[in-house]
Length: 502
Image 1: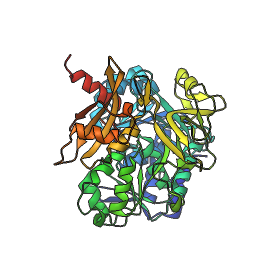
Image 2: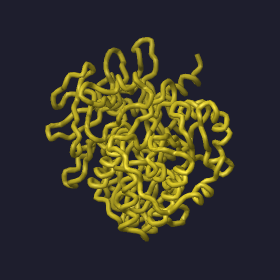
Image 3: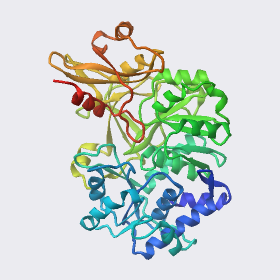
């Protein structure tokens, strides 16, 4: 088995169909496959062997995709780093995994040169590095068959969000990514005529597996943007070049502010949200404005997808992330690992072919990540309803304990999003001498709208238990976010406390 066989098959069946469109330049499946073959054979000439670690530290591009599949075809392991790594993050992660060769761009060259000898980095592939990608491609052959790997061999290593302490590099197998891609293609009814917009970073599980791998598997076209650009996104849609749209909640919030939105969607047939929980009110407003549901599933870097919500449209349940996919088991457990009954809130645990092998060089992380029997602990709080639909309550680490009561921020945020004057919000706990933590709402108002704290408080009191109602309402212009667009609540809390006078 080799994950790169999916590219081979699409190139065989759809050689002249567009595989990637970047800056209005189209690469066909035949061209992409031949380019990845050249990269694979060139890497082998340079001494790369099956199982060797090869890094990718670059923004999204057609070249990134070709290099990724070239690494896999050579039987090596693709370690995908965020191109946004800064300061101590880069030596921490690259030093942790120690790739033999790394594909990057010149902005990162000086940082990598300082690390080169200490981590055993042999070659840097970049325009000013040891070898340019153009020269590497010239060294290779367009004809090559992927090296056979064991289904349990590591195909790629993706780092989870944290960049402090001991890094967590999730080791994902050829079988795992292949099963994930197949499940996504099945539930989203992918075809070779689909055109998927991707501005999510390829180092992230959403961009790399959910969008890129699932699209390549089914012979569709990837429309690539370096980041979310509202004008360019709507321009591509209006031109009929997008059938599938993937984004995070903050993007849908922004697009809802566009006048005449429904007339600008072109051939769009499918919308999907991931990386953070999507408020029900946003789903409702989007459906009313566009006539299209925003679909969700549940998963994480360590295993995805776990559930899906919409294969049968009439059974789409707003607010739920759906039912477990084929071959994946899901349980709700308490903090001691005991199984809880239907309707009870607890930690979501799951197992199946999608689950990672473990974390790279992190025995303590592996010890705490699993219950006995291969059950992965998600760190998310959820519950099942009587029909087997899973609901995400919140992240375990985001829970606020105020006056001895547990408050899940997502519940409060869902109510806040009902208010027409609120564009974006995040609820966190801030230190409080009396309550331990006080529930606090950070709010970005909609343009031209005024937020009155007392009005919000009275509104929330009519819908929530008193202890869940925020005691403080802080207006901000923006919120810290990850490259995937997720609001970083810990960073938000830290920024506020650092700025607040004693």
